[in-house]
Image (cartoon, rainbow, N blue to C red):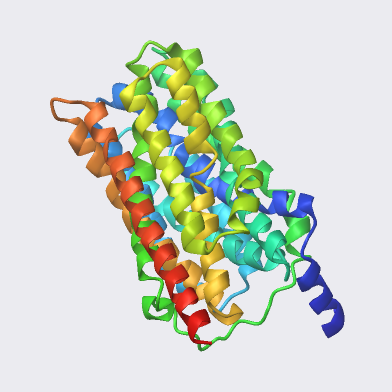
Length: 408
C-alpha cells in the first residue's frame, strides 16, 4: 500500500460493518468471558456449595488475570503487531473458557479463571487500539467507531444467554460445565468476521520509545480515578445481579428477559451516546454516562419488580460499555497518536484493579445481615462517585479553556 493510499484509508476509516465485526473482542473479553459468569454463578454456587465470597472470588481471579494481561499488553503493544495480538487473545480466551468446564474444586477454578483472564485483556487492549485507528480522522466517525467497538460486549451478553439456556431454570444446577464449553465455541464463531476487517485497518506509526506509564497521562488523573470507581461499581452489579434477582418474584423468564435487554441495550447504546460524545469532552462524556449507569444500578435494589429491573437493564445496559469508549475518546483528544497504545493499556490496568476488587468486596458484604441487597449497594455508590469525579474534571477543563480564551 502506498503512503497516499494508506493516508486515505486512515482518514476514511473502515466501513460500518467492519466496525461491527471488530467488536468481537469486547464481545468475547467482556460478554462471554466475564459477564456470562453472572448467569453461571447461581448454579455453580449451589452445585459446588460456595459462599457468596467464594463465588465472587472466582470472578476476582478472572479480573486479576485480566489485570496481568493488561500489564503484559503495555509491553506487547509496543513490540508486536496489534492485529496478531488481537487474534491471539481471542482464540486463547476460547481455550480458557472451555478449560473451565471440568473443574469442581474451588482452587482449580480460581487458577483456570486467573489464567483465562490474561488473553482476554490482550484481545481487549489490542482491539481498542485497532478501533481507535479504525475511525479515521473524522471526529464523529471516531466517536462512533469507539462506541460500536465497546458496545460489542452487548452481543456477548446476548450470546451468553443463549449458551446459558440449559441452566436458567431453577434447579438445573448440574449443566453449568456445558455452558462453559458452549461459550468457548461461540468465541471461535464470533472471531471469523473480524478476520476480514482487521487486515484493512491503516495503523498510524507508534513511537517505540513512548514510556507506558501513568505519568504519560499527565492531567488525566481524575479520569483514571473515575475509571477505577467504574471498575469496582459495574462489575459488582454484573457479578451478583442475577443471583439477587433469583430471590425476587420475576422468575426464570423474567431473569432471561432482563439479561437479554441488558445485551440489546448495550449493543444499541453506541448509537445513542455517539452524538452526545461528539459534543462533549472526554471527561464530560464520562460523567454523563456514569451517572446513568449509577441510577440504573440502584433501581433493582430499590424495587426488584419486573418494570424496575427492565428499566435498570435499559439504563445500565445502554451505558456501561460506553464508559470504556469515553475513556478512549478522552485519550484520543488529549494525547498524540503515538501515545494512544500505552495510554489505553495503562487505563486498562487502572480499571482492572477496580474490577478485581469489586466482586470479592460485593460478595463479602453480601454475607452480612442485609444479604445481596447490601452487597449490590457498592455499585451505585462507586458509580455515582466516579461520575462526580469526571464531572469535576470536565468543569475544570471548561473553566481553564474559558480563562485561556479571555487572555488571548
